[in-house]
Image 1 (cartoon, rainbow, N blue to C red):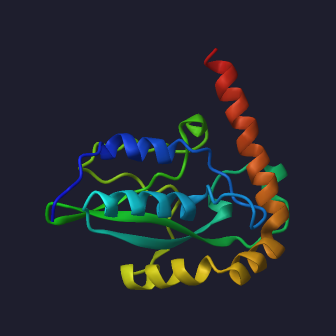
Image 2 (cartoon, helix red, strand yellow; image 1 turned 180 degrees about the horizontal axis):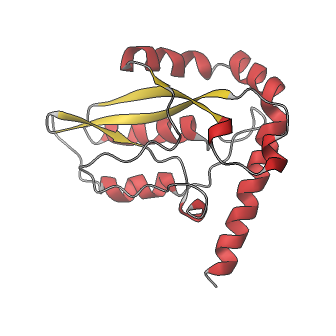
Length: 175
């Protein structure tokens, strides 16, 4: 399979550095883990790599969030998505979730194009690539996202706002 010439490390950084934000309405772009995974999936496919989604579960309570965010009613168990890309004979974990401005609070991945990145969340359970593809398809329907926003929307808004505060502090610190 021929590969188009594209610097996949630079493409990874471009997707990674889109400011992470959970969409609060269907009109907002999906810049959370699933949206970033979808963007990167298309890029890897376009340049000829085998790529697959991996979905895992995590608990928000394991994320070291500030009390003002954590105390807002929400479901603790959540799903997270990232990719596995076939490099040579090995499936490599590639997770572009957190943008570089969040490095003071989260592990922001760099990727060398060959080795595993860390998964952005503390993993509780991982699904197979087949189950993950199905979860990605079902989880992004309008009905599923609407139900999720109804249950967790206020929490997501507070989380997004906290991340925006972190980015402002990060930018001020680099001036």
